[in-house]
Amino acid sequence: MRAAVIIFPGSNRERDVCAALKRASGKQPAIVWHRDAELPAADLIVLPGGFAYGDYLRCGAMAAHSPIMREVKARAAKGVPVLGICNGFQVLTEAGMLPGALLRNKTLSFICRDVHLRVENSQTIFTCGYEAGQSIRVPVAHGEGNYTADEATLDRLDSEGRVAFRYCSPAGELTDADNVNGSARCIAGVFNESRTVLGLMPHPENVTDPLLGGTDGQGLFDGLVSALQ
Amino acid sequence: MKARVHISLKSGVLDPQGKAIGNALASLGFTGIGEVRQGKLIEIELEEGDAGKAREKVEAMCKELLANPVIENYDIEIG
Image (cartoon, rainbow over all chains, first blue to last red; front, top):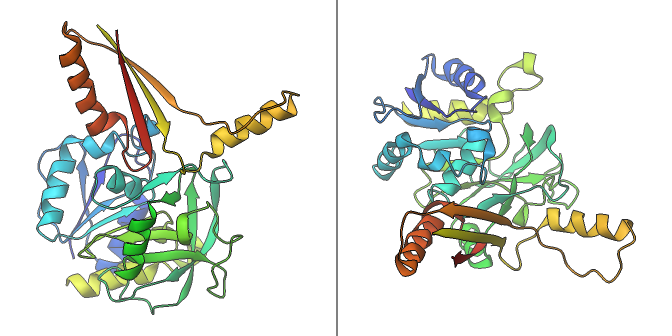
């Protein structure tokens, strides 16, 4: 699996995600600068975490209009998988590639700690390394991760199996206390209609090595490698 | 010509910043405060001399970039 990782001014998790991708696939991902209009051939496009354009105007709003995003959209339309993590998720919603928006956390504070996620749908290229209903421990690091969408959109996401992950307790229960940022229906990550685009606020790339304190994120990268090989 | 774009969160969209401001006002002793909502004001200088065309242009800017229609409303003032 060859991946291309897009960087914007202010991206800061590209090294982490490259390390996770390299560990899973054995191949060094290509790094693509946001001003480039050309994207190398890739089996997977990744928008990493960070603070693209300093979160000016709205998180992800400026990056969503970067020159490279036209090409990302075109590839996604052809079925090339796109993974947006944290700020990358915000960029995907601002670019209209995923429904909904990410608002300020309900607590108003930046949250940087481990959370538990329940895998909602394991029948996708991103989540086939997990079991549906499985609870995994993954860190979050964001100030604007409070997922919102209108009720009709939320209903559609639910009925179409397009919620990828929900914030949960270690045992996998959905509670207000575990819904760290106040997201609608505890949503931590969603798919597009064809399930080839995933956006999620937590950082699975940061738990892919025992030295980092966990390996629960490995399933996402291993799953992608096995699905896209 | 100058355009002023007021951007506000749609009603029903949670505004924790507005809530925090309301709480701070209450703790300062201001009474009789209902809901507080925080928005944005963007001022744009335009070369366009025709108010109608200027509005059209700014409308397009709002749709493409300035506001996120999922969560925000906007109001344009030309003058």
